[in-house]
Figure: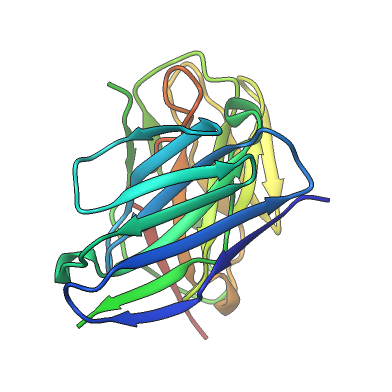
Length: 113
Length: 112
């Protein structure tokens, strides 16, 4: 069966520090991978998605970047965090979005102080 | 572009009350439509899906029917429980079917 792992679960980082969040998927090949952010009390904002190794599409210009160094690994990064980067970050995967939807990870709660 | 409109929350109900959360979308021709649920402090889980027009998805007592003629996918439950308190997201695929479009989410609060 397929599983998705996302870590860490909680993170408190000072302003200006770097960020690296990792997401890995098991049990499937060549998945589409997604990073979403959910600000407190708000909806979901798609940050990046990837349909293959090294292929990254950015939905909104911002202080973040994403990389996909391996087929089932998706990394969200920042060189210098801003207060506005605080939020709940969710990774998701899919094989056939239109028919199966997404499977989400458990999320990372990031607080920038 | 594609968009989805959900009724604003919070929706506050007493236990065993009937629930409807409205969802409408703009594009047509989606292969499937989805409802996701987010319990406090957790990621999103797929609640149910409908795979074609007029199809009814169901899970945990929740139901939603893919209405192509009204471009709607309303979520219903006949008798809610306190444990149903969560945020519910309607999510059709975006045109091109590589991504989902999420509604703003509707918070449901069920009191005993």
